[in-house]
Length: 434
Image 1 (spheres, one colour):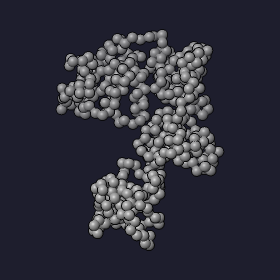
Image 2: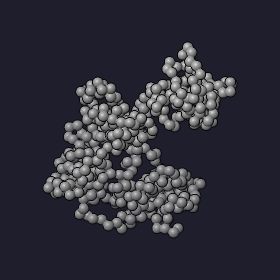
Image 3: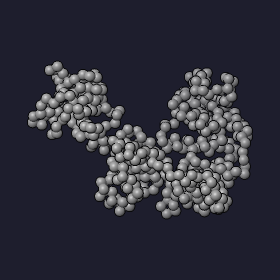
Image 4: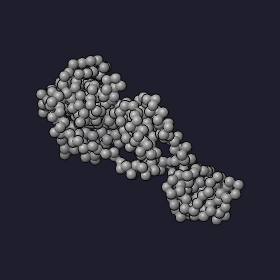
């Protein structure tokens, strides 16, 4: 449809999964013209805003296309207003952003769209002699070493060249096509897998190509800082944090990002370190140093000696094959510890008086500080910011009257609990949604 080597990225409203977001962002780096596709039966959605933000940040020329213009209730004028409300000034309406309405069913506007894309490309200033590309994924090959997949933007990457990305580099002795067939060169818009990087390059970073190793060494010496970056969290802060700390090791950078996104949904967990490849003794040392730290291995193998050492030091290693296993694993851990996410909390209160304890049943006075409490609700007991017990409310009374629900900041009530431990005045009670 479009001439050879013309790079176009078309985005529609797609669920914002982490792996899609990364692919989308990296694809934009490698494209020359983008199409912001808006359906006439859906209009502007949250995903559209996300896509436009990426286009704007990377300063990619783009065309607004209203698709499905043949649907019965298509209202182009309304769609134009939605677009304008998102600070996109359309051609003919006070701006210069071109727009079209198309229908894949009737082929209306398709030829005009192709002509407009080609016109955009011809207007771009191209440096034909420059070799340019972008890293889209990295992984560790157990036999060959560190590999990265590159999308070429301009020029031709040839066998014998040297690729530099950040402070990582690789000679292009081993180049593979998308079907893992050995190749000698890769041109514009061609994905190529290069094996043998000195360290995992970062997805989204552009590459530089050199002909000689001396040129690579000179470039790295002059352009890369030797300053070692510290971990993203202060050591003392990590050791004193109540959150469960997670170390992630994965097979590729894409799955690594997806794992991080999944864990970020849980407020009681924090990722303190990530990396490609199998779990090592270094990971165990970090887990011991920071305390309350678990390790996730995504599609990677853990050596027997590492597993044995982890067991000896009571360090949990969770090996998984799908991102969705993380959510189940975290919820299972929280259930065992009596921990809940903030979103699951229905009320909090402070114990202000202990009335009696007899035959395993304790009666105490509670003052509500947030939300509500309900009969039969599961609760956790915190003392000095540490969770020490979980229990279920047996009964509640207010003004000598039994109640099923009690709510309101500052409201006091008596609560009966079956427990083997002693509650203390000043302890915090947290009720959880059933």
